[in-house]
Length: 472
Image 1 (cartoon, rainbow, N blue to C red):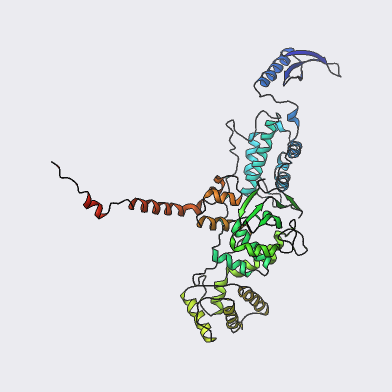
Image 2 (tube, rainbow, N blue to C red):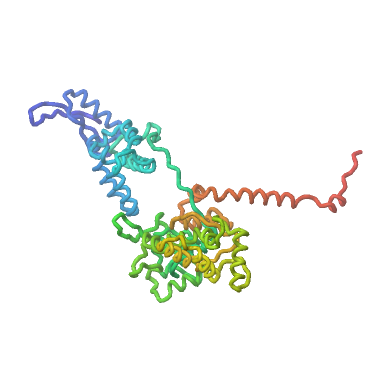
């Protein structure tokens, strides 16, 4: 039961302090000149404790920056990259506005104003919608944790109903890029090493994230069972440090190893110990994403992505991205002129003829352009083009993961199977990420329902065998 005590401070002034009990501990209010005010405050605090609404008045004096440090210390189970991104976001966007402000002095209108006008630390202009949205989410989570820790009675970034009206509009996501099977083979063939070719195909046919595929060991791949065990992943920090830890969702999974890759994976693992990395850098350490992208993946994509255009230019045809009948006729004529069997498929041997034809059209090129042209045709000489092939825009390593989802769905995989392969936490995430790829299922479902219904239609023989009786 709340009561008061009379106290005298160091200056000799007499006042009253309210005493109350919350969570089994006896606590005190601040000093009041009136006994009645002290008792009323003690009763309010005690009543709030009974309804789980009590907040330690002293806890709210902690600044936002101090609370962020304490909050992050309790999140050691999160991925290092996640914690690093939170620290960067807090340091550059939140700390300048709220870092030195006590928690209890953060007001809703201040958060709303900051979310709308948040400046970029580099340009001084308004930060991008994506950056503002991430920063607001971080501040909301930080203040939610303060409420849970009984440092705040309510979250000032939320309305009384719990909404976050200051949250910037979600930015439009970049459309996914997908490769067909033929385009994927073209990219893989354009790489310059067996390791690069195997890595590209493995990523695009299993959907592994870069951190997961680069952390695979020889023991993680079982060619006999045709399974790949995904148990860990590399995370790259901003300072370049690579950390080996759990996967993004902290879950282990198995993905199918396509039979077409078993020999290539076995060759990649040959001569290595079970604990050795399957894919390594030039010095035997972990293969870094930026290095592989610069030296192997990007050149292969640039060559394979404009293969048809390059072929048409070398044959003296009008520019275009499609291997059509005009290109096929020119290829057959080129092979016939060289004394070879007429065919409209451009294989490595035919690319040699294309390179010879291209050299006759290089008079207007500079020396550097000629060197680039020679390298481009050398990369394409490892590929095969056939009628119907199309050029494609440049893509990133992560687009190989999107390609895996696209190829799996087009091959008839269920949402649950795609979810398990990609390591998504739920089928809802898979559906929301690749909803557009499932639209064709509606057409197939309609056709199947129609065919099933039509199959039940009575035949002519059935109609004659059971004639309708005339009405009496």
